[in-house]
Length: 201
Image (tube, rainbow, N blue to C red; front, top):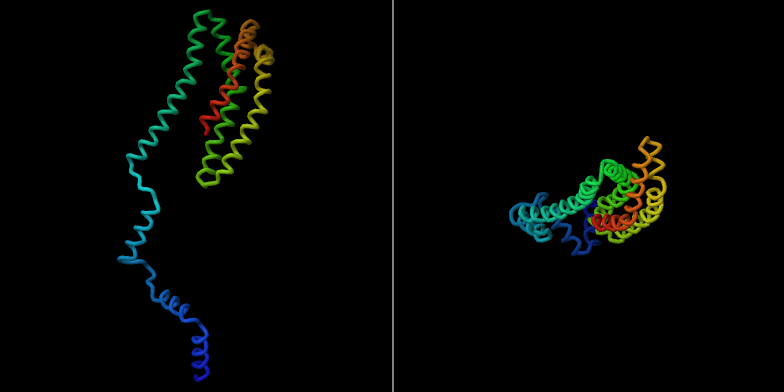
């Protein structure tokens, strides 16, 4: 008994008084914050987080939704206007523009837009994690990949549109006009690529 008390006295004497006080305060502190301590903790959390309301969130979402809707209407409107105007030239011209537009969308536009849309997920996650270096890295990689694919896509539009359509059973005259339409779309391919990149950012 004497040995145990002597050891406890020596152990207590070896600890600094400051550490002993901190240990005592930690032992006396309640497990759950109640009363004023809970209120102070809630105030600290509220000060560290920005105060937003449902109206602010709705305004932000509507600003994004309106700009996105206008962009989609303009993008689809250009194709619709082209088809409407060409429809006055004749049935063959209308069929050629429809087939050419279909081939351009399947073989090129969907690839470019799909690749750029991947940045919506990858770059937003990196930005949310405050990893801005990774945001730039993802953007540079995607731009490099798309720039490498664009020449292949444009060559496809320029040379392979008519042969592939003739293989599918399309009339030769319609296939030739569809290839002419696809060649015109080559001049707009770079603009569409830049537009897709800007919308992804």
